[in-house]
Image: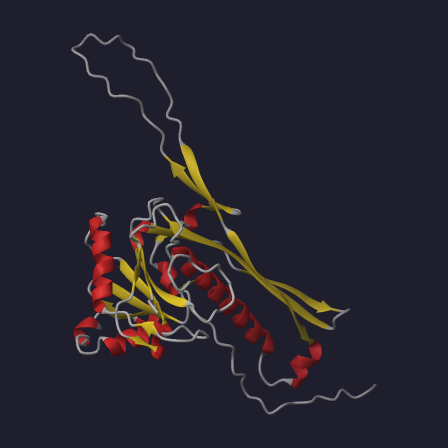
Length: 311
C-alpha cells in the first residue's frame, strides 16, 4: 500500500477577510414574523362598517356584514454566494480549519451585502415625489479628510447644526419627540465630524454609546452609528447613485437619518448548503443564501432625512 504523504504548512491561523457590519438594521420595525416564502405579508384590518345613530327607531335585527381583511406585501431579495470548493488535500496540508473559515466568510459577506443594500434603501432618493426638503447638505469647512474613499477633492464637514436641522425636519413632520432617532455615517464623514466638532463634543455625548450594537455617540438626540460605507450621491445631491455603482471622483457621502418607528425590515433565514465528498472535485462544496428587504413604512417618507456632503 502506498504511503500517504502529509504536507503541513507553518500557518497556525489565517488572517480573515474584513467585512462591514449590519447592526444598524436592528433599529427598525421587524417584519421577520411576517415572512412567507419570498414575500412579507402584513395583515391589514378591514372596515367594520358605519356607525349608526338613531333614536330607537332602528330596525332589528340589523344587517350583518363580514369584515374583509386584507394584506400588504413587499418582496424579499435573495442574497447568494456561489459554491466554494474545499479540496480534500487542503484538510491535510493546512493547519487551520478552512471549512470553518469559509463558513464565517460566507456569513460575514452576506451580512455585509445585506447591510450595504439596507443602507442604500434608507437613503432618501431625491427624485422621489415626497423627497422635497428631506435631502440637506453639510455646511462645515471643505477638507479632503471628509471625502469618500476612492473619490477626490474636498467635502464640507458635517456639523452639529446639520444634525439639529435634520431633527427639526422630523419635528415638523410631527414625528414624536422620543427616543429611536438614528444617524448612520460613513467612516470618513464620522471621524471628520468628530474632529470638526471636538470643541463641543464631550463625554456627555458618549454616555449612551453601545459599541456591540454599533452605536458610537449620542448627539442632540441622535444615536450615531459609524460604518465604512452608507450610500453615495452625485455632486449636486439631485440623484442617489445606483446600488453597486462604480466609485466616481465627485461622489458625495451621506449621513442617513431615520426614526426606528418609521422604517421596517425583514430578514429570512440564512442557509449554508453543503455537498460533501464530491468525487469529481475530490472535495466538499459549500454555498449560502439569505433573503432580505427593508423600506420606509410611510410613502411620504416622514421619519427619514439624508444629510449629503457639499463639495
